[in-house]
Picture 1: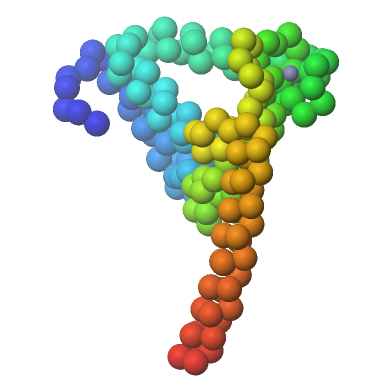
Picture 2: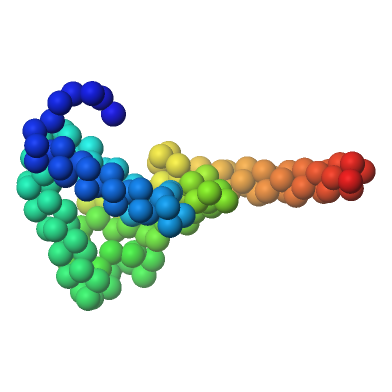
Length: 160
Ligand SMILES: [Zn+2]
């Protein structure tokens, strides 16, 4: 964070966000979506210099998410996780996370309005054939990890 001086409202909002973040981290939730959201809100407060506007935006997003939860599931694709009226079809995200909760790899099926359907894999847009190639590489990697785990066991056993 920069040392730029903020208005009193921005400073107060940032202090509240920092306190909420510290509490979450103290609870062991340092890499959760909640903490990431707090960080993004703090960034918005800094960028806009208008905590009231950011607060209204956050409340709007939360209200829409709440309303959407009770809406009908997607009528176009069974894999789509979106609900209610929507043009962008987005599948559930499949992830592998590290022990600390950081995302190691994620993939999901997408069909955004006006574009071809695709599989998003770590920021890469893949067609079905490209996705199958990556899936094979991931299987090879998984097998390699098992071989390494066995080698690690052997090292650990020899040195314990
Ligand atoms: Zn959909």
